[in-house]
Structures are given as C-alpha cells and as structure tokens.
Length: 330
Image 1 (cartoon, rainbow, N blue to C red):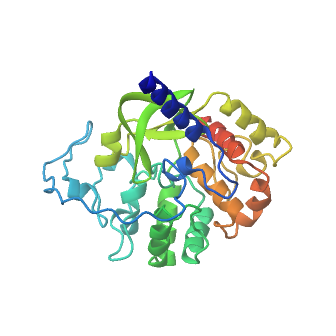
Image 2 (spheres, one colour):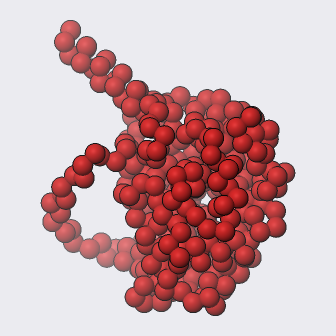
Image 3 (tube, rainbow, N blue to C red):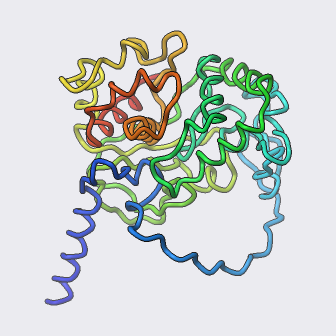
C-alpha cells in the first residue's frame, strides 16, 4: 500500500511541476531547453566523465552520396554538407566561418537555414531584418532570460567577429531560400518521455508522461538531428489540447490583451516588408523571443515596436500564440 501511495504522490508531483505557472519573471524552462527553472543557487560543477574514444566510423544518410565522421559533421569551420543540391552555393562565412571566433553558420543553422529548436531558423528572413539582428548581437542587445542557455553568448561573439560584408552575404544567402514546412504541431495531453540535451529535448524510450502547460518540441529522429545533423529531419511540437484555437484568437483579434499579429507580420503570418514571418516557425524560439522582449533582455530597433505588444501577455498566452503560429503553413 505504501508503495502505491508513493507512486501516486510522485506522479501527482510531476503533473504539478509540468503544468505549474512560474513567477512572471521566471522564464518558462521548456522554451529554453530545460526541464525546470534555474536553481536558487548554482549547482557545483559536475565531475567530467572520462573522455570516450573518438568515433571515427563513417556516417551516412539516405539520399546522400557523402560520408562523414562525427568530427567532420561537427567541425565548426567546415561542417558536413549532406545535400549540396538542396541549397544555393554557400558563401565562405556560411560554409566555413572564420577562425577563431566565427563559426560556420551552417553548423548550427544547417546549410538550408532551417536550424534546430535550440537556435533559430534563419531561412526566408528579410535581408534588412537579418542584418539588424546581427548588429543587435554586436551591440549586446540580445541576451537570454535564462542564464543557463549559451546560444546567445555564442552568437554575440560570432557577430562581433563578422564584417558588415560577411553579414550581408549570409543575409542574402539565407534570404534567397523560402521557409518551408519543418515542424509538425500535435495537440495532445501525453507525450514521449524526453531528456534535455544541449537545448533540445530527445526522446529516451517508449515511456509517456503528461504534457502539462508547456510545448514539447523534439526531433522527428533524435539520432539524425543530434548526431548526424540531418538537414532534412524536422521536428514535432506537442502542444496542449485547445492551445491552437486559443492562440488563433490572440493572433487574429488580440483578445483584449495585444494587437493582431497580422498587422505587422502579414495577414498570412508569412512576413511583410522587413518584418519576418511567423508561420511554421519553431514555437520554442517564438516563446523565447516574446519572453526576452517582455523582460527587456532583447532590445534593438524592432524590439521597441514589440514591447507594448507582449507587455500584457502571460506565459500561457505566449504558449498559445506560438502553438498557433507554428501550426500555420509557411
């Protein structure tokens, strides 16, 4: 009997944790790639595990004639390009970067610019928006509300090492490609059990767990995404039941809390002029940006226009908005 009671208590505790509303200034951890909020006191550094022997075996992917080792796949200054025919010829800063400070754009964002849940999809962004974003990074106007997330600091260092000509070359390259479907949105109450890993959530086994009040964005194929950096392997976004409909009301009418998103991002949410599209983009990324803007951690030219838009949005509102925008066809 005690064992059964203990199991019930543990299960209830998980449901409460997964669905709990954090304080208004605490970033929703799921959007930043973590299972829970930052600890009150930083944990002591873990003892590093013994280094494993490097995997030198040749890896391959369906539809690609190339083979690469793990080291080649994750090379910061010339990562693997599995499908050269899927994209235009890459400029040097995208394909190889510039040692030591500028990593190749194609490493994290892929040669097709689709990116992964821990960073951003940059394909299809207006050139002027891309350029201004990089200048904001250079100026220190882009910071993460969750201090545990390293991407923003990495991007700041990369941006500071790039010339204006290199930024323009990257902007023109990624802007020349259209954003196409990459994320499948699924409304549900239970999801595969996952573990956080480098800003992503990876499915561990066949177990299920409650979704609660969060969005779980996870690769369609963990090995293809985490190990092989497969630019053709997209993501699932599990969202709470009813969140897409609630998000539609916020996006289309403002629901008394904000303004219509289509006023700036276009009636189809595919962007308008220098304003980027939202349709089909990563919901984790969208929530991160709204939260960072609300907290004043993301600043810059375009952010000033967004501050009053997000000022009255709750974490739940942001979740619902992102669920809806991610579900739309880009």
